[in-house]
Image (cartoon, rainbow, N blue to C red; front, side):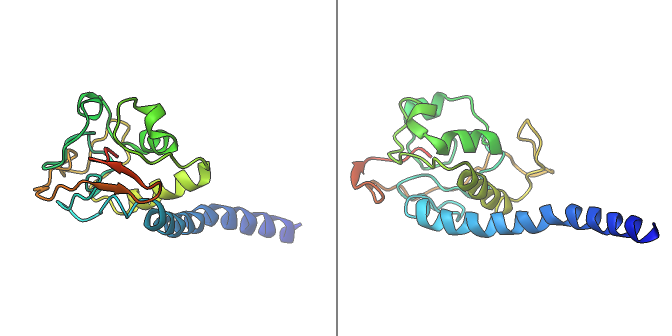
Length: 167
């Protein structure tokens, strides 16, 4: 009987540890997906806008506020804080989520891929506490940057010309 109880305790402990390992795997997969799907248009470097705005500290930031980036009026007027669920909904189908966005990317249809990308972005965001309101642990949630670089170009994934990429 004692062996069963010990086995049950060990099994519960293993299950409790599994999400942490799964989270690391999700972050690693998210980085791979980010590099493949996002990095052509978005930088994680503060103030470095490409075709799309910098995604430096994006989790918890209000939409449409990166300095030096020219957003569509739809994105400027959107009342969105980029919490994980909002990011996931947006990257699933950007033009359906926010009609009028200039982001030409068609979206990430696979839910696990969206989760992984957001896990990676979250791991790269400083000061985000996971609150529903986008608050941070004493750091700026607005993601202000000096954003001096603005770029037009081509949506590399789809080959369509775009002035900007609102993502």
